[in-house]
Structures are given as structure tokens and as C-alpha cells.
Amino acid sequence: MDQVRFDTEDGLSLQGELRLPDGPPAGGAVLCHAHPLHGGSKDHPLLWQIRIALARQGFAVLTFNFRGVMGSEGVHGGGVGEVLDTRAAIDEVIRRAPGPAFVCGWSFGAHVALREAIDDERVAALTVIGFPLAPVGSVLPPMPAADRLGRFTTPVLLLAGDADPYCSAPELGALGERLGDATVRIVEGTDHYFGKREREAAGIVADFAVATARRRRGG
Image (cartoon, rainbow, N blue to C red; front, side, top):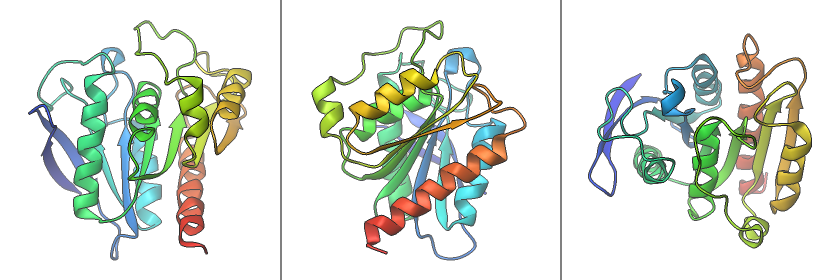
């Protein structure tokens, strides 16, 4: 595991970790963590397992802390500055593993990841986990308009537990219908945190990343 630092376009230095696969990277992946004001950071078992699963599939995986979290400079940006953080993370992982990037966000990080991906053609596929469709105690920036969501044709996996209080299956399905190319997966018997089901969730994410990479290559 390599400890890395990289800079945002507004001049902040962010803390991250890069896990490289055993062989030459097949691509790069960026993981975005949950809400900083509710204990979110790169160091969560769900993100650890996703990082492991993606590295085993040949991805160079960058996990990082949003601004103001642990060793990252700055202060919480209300979900706006964090879009710049994600863009900088994509810059860094593409520098390490040139080519299109896979982005995965959980909870607050899912909201940030979607808003970055919709404007970033370098994102080849996107997974959002536990997308916050119900109030989480903090105000988030508005979602992109419906017409922009409909024009967003990057493959998206929408993943949630069936007992997630912030992301109900019907609402997530409705979001999927608004996107141009979305797959919805609901895991039974778990909630927002996928407690003791982290490996299962990670396997779903890795399978999607591999499938979309193959689809992009025409394989």
C-alpha cells in the first residue's frame, strides 16, 4: 500500500492510499467515503473490502480523505468542495494507471461521485452505494436536473441494502429510471452499512467494474 498526497485545483493537499494490483494495472479506481461530519473517512471496512476486491481484479485503487478529514487539508465543503477533491483523485489515479477511471462512492460519497461523474468524461463507470435519498442530518447540494441525468449514459450501478433508512428500494429504482444506463441491485437482510456483508457488497462492485471494462473494450 502506497501512502500518497495530491493537490486539488483550489490548492489543498489531500491524504490518500493507493493499492496496486499484483501485475500491471488494468485501470484505475477511486473510492469516495461517507459523510465527514458523521464519522466518514477512507478507513471503513466496506471501503477496505471494495479496495481489495478491485485490486484483485487488476485495478489500481485510490482511497482518500475528503478535505478536512484526518490528514487532508481544508475544512468540510458541504458536498461542493468535495467534488473538486474527487476530480483531483481521478487525476491522481489516471496518472498512476492511465486510461478511463472507475469511480465508486458510498452515502455522501455517492452523492459527490455522481455529481462529479456527470461532468467528467474520464469516468468510464460509476457505482453509488446507499445513495442518500432521505435526510441524513446535513443538507446536500441539489441533484443534477432530470434532463442532465437522462443524458448521462455512463454505466451506473445503484447498490443498497433493503433495510437502508436513507435509500429505499423504490426511490433508488426511480433514480435508476432517470439515468441513461443504470443497474439497480438491492441486497436483502442488510442496511446502509452492510455490516458483516462487506465482502458480498465488494464482490458486486468488482463484478460490475470488470463487466463494464469488458463492455468498453468490446469483449
